Image 1 (tube, helix red, strand yellow):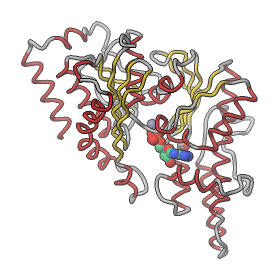
Image 2 (cartoon, rainbow, N blue to C red; image 1 turned 135 degrees about the horizontal axis):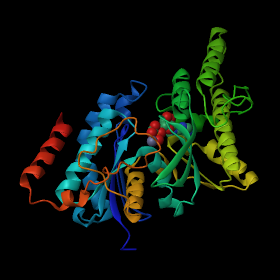
Image 3 (cartoon, rainbow, N blue to C red; image 1 turned 120 degrees about the horizontal axis):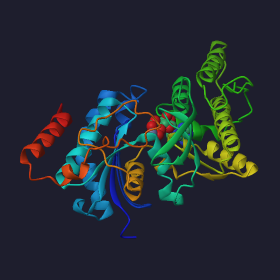
Length: 379
Ligand code: KG4
Ligand code: ZN
């Protein structure tokens, strides 16, 4: 519908420069430039390399998204950007660019939370989010169980990883198996040839006295690495497919078990799974089965919307506009540890954002913001 908010979203929290354009719940463009190849030889994301890559990709990716959506920048109702959590230097590039575009175009700016965006993106695939929705977010940086009664204003953390994130565990085991980086997709593929019950790897934090919704993958990681080392020391061949399948089964078993339990305990009927690891085929299959058994409706966006992208930021920005949430102030800063309980960063009470947006008469102020943005962009 033409009266739904048209929002451009910018995501630069890690190694993807994502620019998405959304009208209400409809995806119009999803342009992503990834620097993953530049990090591969280091076996993980190098923050400084990521920041440089964002700088180079930002303007072309924005132009590509506008072209793909067939809209003019002047038609936008707002610019949304990931304000955190994420890598400080990488976030700064996105926030600076969003400020520059928003100010130059005279549009409101919405600094939003990366995790809430991962949840909200499902509106582009399955329509409005049920309220409440339970969300399992599993990526290279996060493993969290979140209860979201209202994605624009009320997100409650139930549990999270106490050590490695789920994706990080995939990446580390892939490294031990010499499978390259990132590890998730390749383990997913190889595991299809293996037996998930071949090796009984430990299920972390599933004892009766353990925190019911927290996760731990470092014990599993160590157990898998030791098992592989022992095989190698004995001069035996490592059964890569069986190890991959058994490791993956341990991760997926714990994730789905805890997510379903949280839904039951909280009386929530809808579970969404997001983040890069949500692309995992075994996770999707097991979650489907366990949700069906428990009478829970499962929502998992297609893989391209699960990994980091700009569409998810635009989706949450559009929801902020639709619900009349306050825009962010021009001094919005990137916050590498933005709490998950803050779906967005509104301007402080009493701050009149609109005055600033339309106040292009003040040439001095205008230049000042552009100067700041330019400094941030090229520092
Ligand atoms: O959400 P994302 O793109 O970036 C972060 O915010 O971290 O997630 C990337 C993570 C990586 O650790 C990658 O190995 C993992 O998601 N991943 C997968 C799969 N595809 C990506 N893990 C398991 N199975 C997959 N198919
Ligand atoms: Zn992410």
